[in-house]
Image (tube, rainbow, N blue to C red; front, side, top):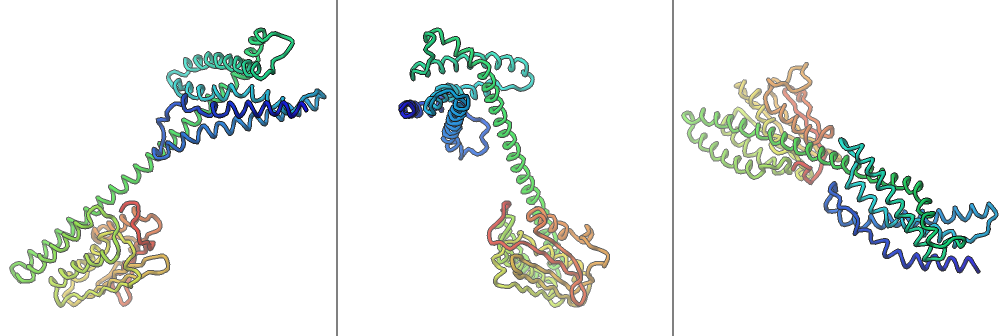
Length: 404
């Protein structure tokens, strides 16, 4: 049967040439715009396979289209012949495609050389199209598909001329595809760089905010020590010892934006011990943290400036004993922290922390916004029975975020 014979010839030629044609890596240009170097070997391995798959779809589609056209016109042919013709025609573009991509990358059409590069690619398109015509002729000659009305050598210019117009279109499409891929890679590279820069700026901003707290806290503690050196030397010595412990814990978390709540409370305990030594009977601080909340991550140095604010604006300004309550609990997938005192509290008209209320509130709110965005909040209000209340609501998680 003619169909079986022609189809066997098509399959035989395909299986012979595919391993050779698939090796396009020899003419593929390196990609300097790769955004993820770890994926480069995988992408290079996949590119020839994708190109080969597209080529096979075009060959089979063209073969079936030609077969349907001949059948509708009433001309006798076989599907095997039309597949073979399509194979011979598109094999040249499978070989020339990587070369065209290389030329498109080597001679990119960009300012200020747009006109000269367009002229160069027009010339290259003619040469590549002519080369495709020669390849098409050679494939037809090898598979016995040349017209019998003319000699093989007489058909060379015929095949070249046939390939020129359609070849120019294919060359232009491949150059356009190469430019599109390159511009997309550049766009992704700029997007990645912008993301990395934003992350670095946010991390730097967090470090600045954190460094603002450390000298502020140290200055206030040294001021308290100087006030006690002559009045109560033993208390001043105790504070100096606790200050050394605090500095050690602070250095351990240096560069870390988030720590477990348990670690944050250890730091707070040292600070509370200093303040209890300083104010003695005038201050009572109670810390209540639910066991299931201790593993939740919180910004380091989160609670200390809030407690310091309560002491500065509550305890220091009143001779009567004062109380500060620190509470932490897990509510669903949220971590809720509260710092309340029985001092004068916030004015009823204040909805946001003011600079006059101290560095702690403004700094803490800025750090929460940088770390969690809209997922973290800091609210102020009135404590039950009077006094200031600060409520912090964070997403509960046990691993550090991107700025840790």
